[in-house]
Image (cartoon, rainbow, N blue to C red):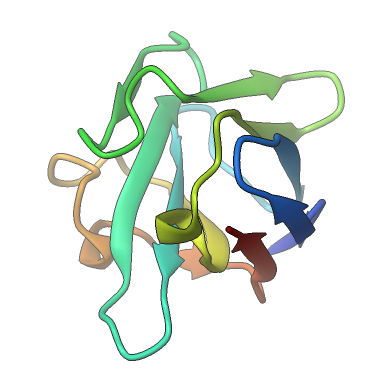
Length: 125
């Protein structure tokens, strides 16, 4: 079983920054991928960013490219999402997830096995 715990959400003004953290614990495999997704009120969950744990390869949704950065700290079993230049459109619950077998492209939430509880991000205009 794998557990993921997100933190770092909160209320921020437009143009501000936040850094989300996701601590991974439990049984994990050596090759896996971590993703961040978000779900705004009344909308479907959408892909934000992903990182291959071993290689550090990253991918981003077009809507966050150049503003968000995903990274990981192997020693702390933690993945981060640095979010800059936030706008009201970034308001959502943010979730981290782990894909233990590198299935699919990693852009779809069906590619992931375990999910955190989410952390809320609210950006005021």
